[in-house]
Image 1 (cartoon, helix red, strand yellow):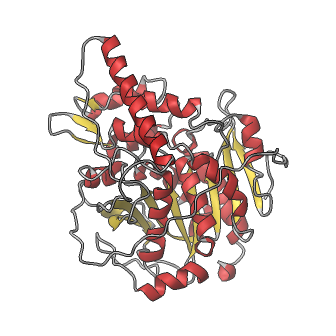
Image 2: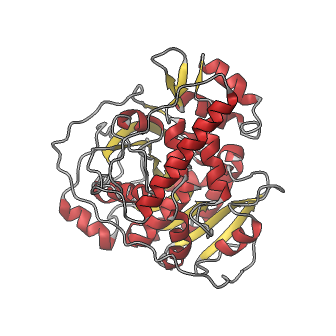
Image 3: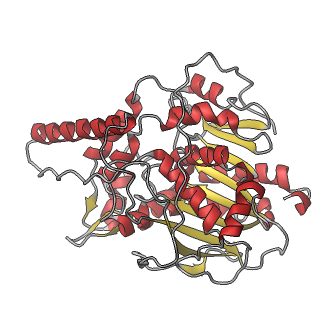
Length: 442
């Protein structure tokens, strides 16, 4: 496919000595299974696809020990006192992450049972041949349903005839997964665990065949023979296209590095695959502070939506994306009104992984050349990709073979939220170009 940015060689760089992928231990079926915290979806998404919601166990053990959440600071009417409390909490979060990076935290990787939540969008009458399965992976702070603004266009596009099934992923501290896991979440999070959770799902829980039949809320653990076959041979009845935005792009790329047989292609939407000096970039620290300071409760969804519409942060969003965020990113608050499903504290924890993005920047060149990569990056005058335009120009050619890129000039980093229709069009063109001639090589 053609590219917007011409080839740019990678300048000299120093290795961060990426860590080996931590294997996971296979759990049995005799787990205490939670219920879905939101009304289960088992309904029509449009006239071609149905949507349902499911739970799968997260990978075990985790890369980090279980660290209790810090005591919440009491709200003060004194702005200076509130800022001081936030500064102390931010410093503690960074201290814990640094200790984890140095291997100085006591305790083994946590074995607390965590769950990932996934939405499944399946064609009401699958083609019966080996069609496409899409895996959508969100950015930090957003529920799995944020992708529905893109899907409402993509699943009516010319490429929809090739797409039999879509799975929308939710990390352990996001959306409904956050509500399921709220008593077991730690105050430290390693980005590689989201990669491990995704591959754990793909190897052990993604059903063998695409079918319009109803699936159970708790997906069944597959026989070990199937999981082992997938590690080297991939899927028997699927071709998987992973589409990841920001943190989700990082996660998708690292999953493909470690288990290439599972993937046919990647669409990386301004992924956090960046080379930064020091433990944390100014952007990371700024996002952490913003998360700690953000409002997370409102009297009602209507009031939240009204305030979001006049917020500089949300003003650029497509109306459908904003509506989805209010509908699925918020839940009823036992104290009255509504609140964010993902707490501002958990969002802050995720932002400050000190090494994940650097590891991905170094390792992305190792993605198997067989796996085609399509980079989708922003082009707004004041927002041309994570770490700036020059970094983006280099990043999209970190693995030159079988790669291409396109710039969406109408959006900044939040392409999924700001330009879902244009993003859907670019994904559709990619799918049509790569897979549209014949299903024979899907």
